[in-house]
Image (cartoon, rainbow, N blue to C red):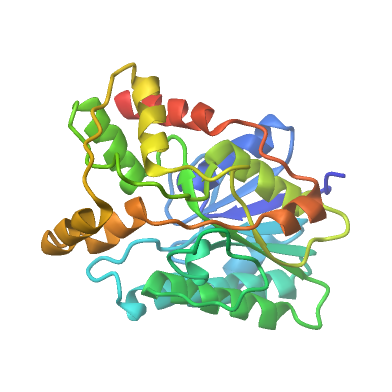
Length: 314
């Protein structure tokens, strides 16, 4: 059953936030976008949330039926392991927003978190589960772990229900990082050394992710706690490359390079982490999300790969 009242979305100008607001409006829902800078029609511009006036944040959330907190820094400006670069935008900003939500009586607070809270890889047949202890390996993951703890502490003993959604790699128009580089490489007709990779990585399409966030907002009773979201089946790197190839209508040559040699090359070229993600496995268990909300991925991953490719070629 859909909640009544506005759904406040922080980070509404971002990759996921813009898509979520569009999804809500298409469904006839009242989205209240909250952004950093002016320029988004109908949005509330608050500047950097970590330094925004608490009263201004509270006014932006007043009367909201739920908050979906998406605003965050994903990439550090300099070093990926610089905790200070992530502390203010991911932990302190979250603290300000959740405290304002509690103070104004918002019934539900949904925090968009990351699979990186759990780590960087999983062994075969052992996906990450919400009950697993956090084990972040980088500054971004640590900041999201701390943001989750901040939300739980702020909501404890109050009517505001905390909900955390840990998200893996998101695929859709506007995606960056490894998946955008793969699209560019296939479009250029480059030979990719991935034929020997046999991995399993949980990913989620942008449309399915937005549906999951809406399901968390609407679920009755509120699905408190931590949940994972992902497509129904993990995907291997070669399979993802072939999806991109089909969307582009362009064959892609895959060279067989043994994975240990590929990792050695990555280390020598300063791309160790990138190659580890391309070659390694990372799976998540979405059973608690499905059980609490009834959510199921409605769109095939190939659908989102096609949308990503079309957006990239524009």
